[in-house]
Image 1 (cartoon, rainbow, N blue to C red):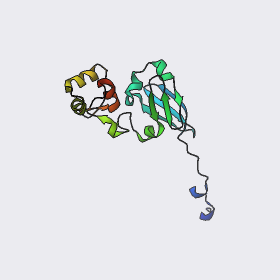
Image 2: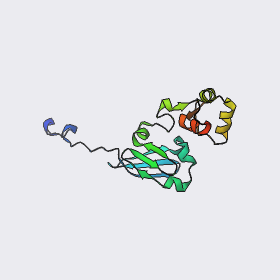
Image 3: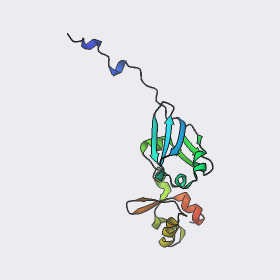
Image 4: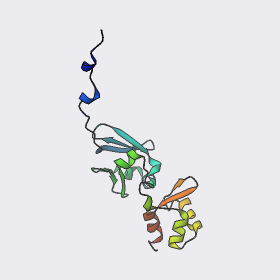
Length: 149
């Protein structure tokens, strides 16, 4: 006959797996940012989510420092958090208050929206298109137009 239900193993009796979000290896290859975590999991995010990293040279991308919470590229001063990657946050929308639209940049810095679009088109200003709207990190706009208000 079958086993007594009291004898069947249950998930309650199995030891919990240790979960760690600490990166132990990271690399950029095949258009993706790959990270291996201390607990053995591997996660990846599209390189296109991180325009600064995407525009970096292969040598700059290869110069990686691991931190407790993520990855740092010192030559281009770019950081990516493991939690952000796991939540599906890209480099633009992980902090909504740090994102501006073309119109907001034009109004804030007293320039034409055409000037902003021209900077995006020439790759002078990293931007991500979401629907029909470009999203630009505030610090990138400040770096381009001097942080004037």
